[in-house]
Amino acid sequence: MELTSPGTTVGVVGGGQLGRMLGEAASPLGIELVVSDPTPDAPAAPAVRDQVLGEFDDEATVRELARRADYLTYEIELADPDVLDAVAEDTGTPVHPHPETLRIIQDKLVQKRRLAEAGVPVPAFRAVDSADELRSALAELGYPAMLKAREGGYDGRGNVPVAEPGDVEAAFDAINGPAMVEEFVDYERELAVMGCLGADERTTFPVTETIHEAEILRETVSPARASEQVRERARAATRDVLDVMQGRGVYGIELFETGDGEILLNEIAPRPHNSGHWTIEGCHTSQFGQHLRAVTGLALGSTGRRAPTASKNILGDVDGRQPARLTGVERPLSTDRLSVHWYGKREVYHLRKMGHLTLVGEQNASAGGLLAGIRDAAEPLTFAETD
Image 1 (tube, rainbow, N blue to C red):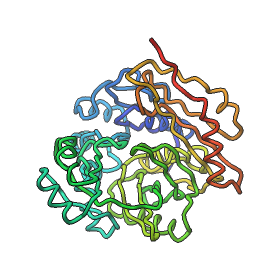
Image 2 (cartoon, rainbow, N blue to C red):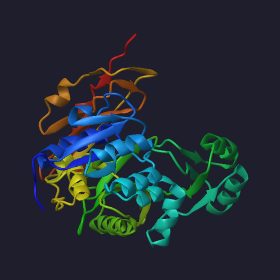
Image 3 (tube, rainbow, N blue to C red):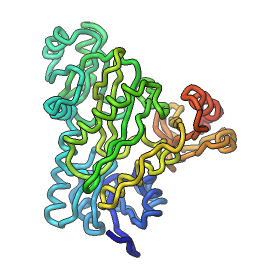
Image 4 (cartoon, one colour):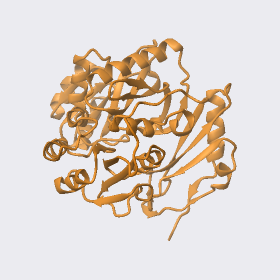
């Protein structure tokens, strides 16, 4: 293992905010990034060496990326595993995580089945291909329940709650495709653990509490407000998930803590995840640095938490689409121990993730105090309306 100049090059399918933060983490490691993205001058562009313009699943684009890279990875599940497989075989450029992992995760039904077979605790679920099948499934699972598109959903998109029998037709029409229905989990809180598979080791980051509203992640705080026994169950579930995954890299693992302190798996992302953004300031190694270490075969870094840490997403608060102009930044910029992350997206629309704030507390800081502090710092933030 050695470092060289010029360094190892990693090709990343996707050039959004995750690609941007990967680029920021790559520089200290001497790693250069080239990203592919269909948006000219994508958010990652200022932080990486170059961008290949093209769709996430376009084979010619991925081949060009592989030609310029020593390793391939992806920061978005819209990458095509068949394309990645073919390009890796033809060019010899390894892909991490393995395309087979992407196949498992892209289809929520396949994901849940594979993990249930491996003994990972999951909510009860059923495949449904029609409104009649949904009614039959709900006769077993009961109401309310969550109907999920098998493919393509993220940030709450593709998830439709079904509260009562009268909602069945509209819910299935809203999904408009293959779906699965999952029992409603009356959870105490939502948790997340970033797990990582390296060349010959694996690590987990500290358990994080995630706070959602309307299926969108709003805030995180670590340590989570859960008992140590619950946190250990969350770590154990994460290790069980990693046993199923193939290929090196970071995995975002979302979990439910039930009212009786048990853990159920919600979903997995085969990449760095919004619930792990706090690790940039809050841990000795960030999830982005860890992902790059893993993909390139370097030794993994320490995942220890520096101090209690909270994060808060900056979400679009406008109707329609308009140029991004965030106002009220003076307060967060002048708040002690608070970091501002701006993703450089040129356009804002309702609930689009435009950036995030991270507040690192003192060693004895409470979760409630951190959340109150970061909410206060974010209170003046708003996007200026344009004509």
